[in-house]
Length: 272
Image 1 (cartoon, rainbow, N blue to C red):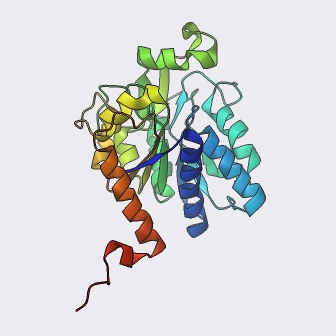
Image 2 (spheres, rainbow, N blue to C red):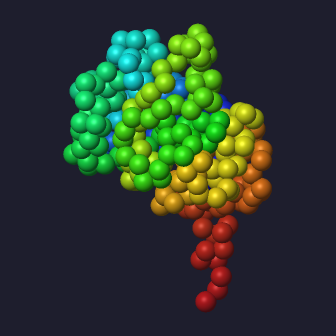
Image 3 (tube, rainbow, N blue to C red):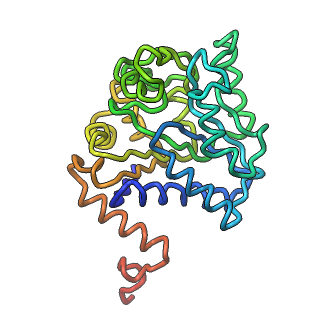
């Protein structure tokens, strides 16, 4: 995993937005996998700014969201469809028919999940999947114990996830206990994964995801298997990483490569 450690969540979010924007500019018809929750909010605000001030064009982009609460319709204020409309879709020029969020009120969830997977395949697959990280190391709603080969399906939320989300619903008793979520296997099929985590409370999860063993108890750890996974963390969330200094050295070299400053890396500077 490529590990990028920024000073704070603001700079980390802007870095994440640049990854997304660069893809949209390079491949206008790209397919983005999107996440909800507090972690990606600042990145979405930066994308909105880029659209308004720099002309970032989303008119040919297709999006698929990771998950949705069971029982919540698209107009429910805590539904993830409403979240995406309020925090991104309503502020950019994306086509409504090109934005997909799982249906929390599907009558046949097994069929709906198969159809969601098929829509992703029909679109050509997800080019870049944005991910947050739960405090227990889960990605999407793939709670501890989820199969690392899992597909889009119904999932019962863990008590820790219910507690984490209670602030949005006004109490734990109001949080739905089921969700439709992309599976870990579905996520790993994305061409690139971009994982965000900010704050000291996420430090154990970041450590276990990046440097711990690959285990279904920390579903984020499956990203170690991905061919192109990038983690963007702030100093606080990266504070428990043992190889933090090495990651900084690798990223400095990566930046030199991307800028074409090869001689500083010793490339082409030695005599023949």
